[in-house]
Amino acid sequence: MFKKTRIGNICYYISDVAKTEAFYRDTLGLDVTNMGDDGSGNDWLLAKTEGGLELIFFKQESKPGNSPIIVFDLVDGGIDTAIASLAEKGATIVTPVSHAPGGWSAEFADPDGHVMSMYQSEEAPRKTSTG
Image (tube, rainbow, N blue to C red; front, side, top):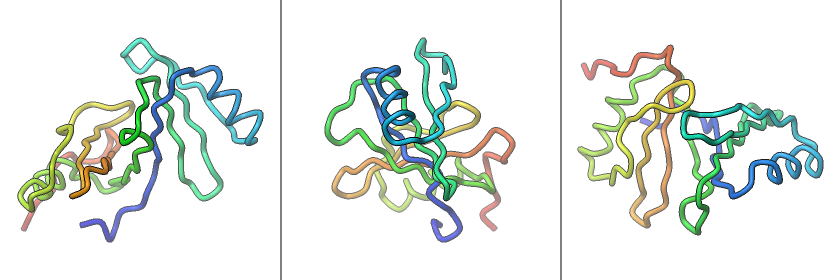
């Protein structure tokens, strides 16, 4: 299932958008874009790296175990089918498929409780055939 995916994003939960933006822009030298309000009343940040990996920063309580989150990018879509397949195989679904900025996401945990995520853009089909 994951052979044709790539890690597209690493998501961090942060306490201060302005401080995080300044650090990643001024200290690390990354191109950081403030993406504005995601509907929750908070700005969020996007920092692109040379290899195409994006760092995403959301203002939310950060505690050990919930940040960072590796995000698998489902370029061809099928997030509903992929999450259903993970559930059938016994994976713990932490957050069911739900709307995310520019698309859909869902979170699941490995046997040790490490949370990972899947994301697909709004343009990709949410379901794929299983046959």
